[in-house]
Image: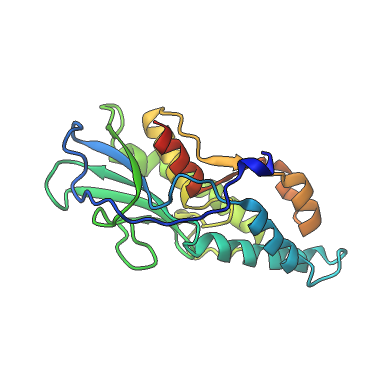
Amino acid sequence: MENNQVISSRAIQNDKYEPTGNQDVRYPQIVIRTNRTPERTDMNDVIKKADTAADQYPFEDKENRAKAVTQELTKEFGSGRFGHTWIIIFNSNKKGDATTYGYHEKYGFVKNGTAGDRNDNPERKFHVERVLPLDENMTTEKLEKEIIPALNEQSAEVGKIMGIPIENPSNGAYTPINNCAWFAGNVWNSATNNGLLFTQNFDGVTHGNYWGMPFLSMVKEIADPGMVAESLAAF
């Protein structure tokens, strides 16, 4: 991705409120929401901070460089400054008849989160969303027993490689790679076959080498709430 394609703004807007879903769409319905404006995150700013964290240690000290970068990136992505993206299943237009799914720093996967640091509540305001009828072949049971556990397993493996503490492996791990947009985007695409683009390009080879994280050579894209918002706004 060329630098001139990346918008530096990370505006957060909480101006929409639909606590029972979209009345014009058949129930049950699946919703993906974000409080980001449709502008992708400027990753150059994030990368500079990670470089600075790594530079506290000699280039040869790959272990400590990697630890410092992991801490910095987790703090950046988990801070909420980039916005949040989450999934809701509305079973009906009755208030409270819904199930929510999200990913949060320190917790990984959260179901029906309402606390301040893991809030995916239907009452939470947002900026853009996409709503579709839930396919008759897709149920919350399938989401919770097949799709979400597979994602949690993936994120837990990444968390182990990055040295991130994992309290409950069955809930996966929130990492800079496996963030809220990664989780919600994958759940949405698996449940709807809608093909939502939720990532932007990332040069894992170059940055992984500099940060002492060779496993990043396999990472070509980074999930971003701003990219989610861009894609949703384009529908």
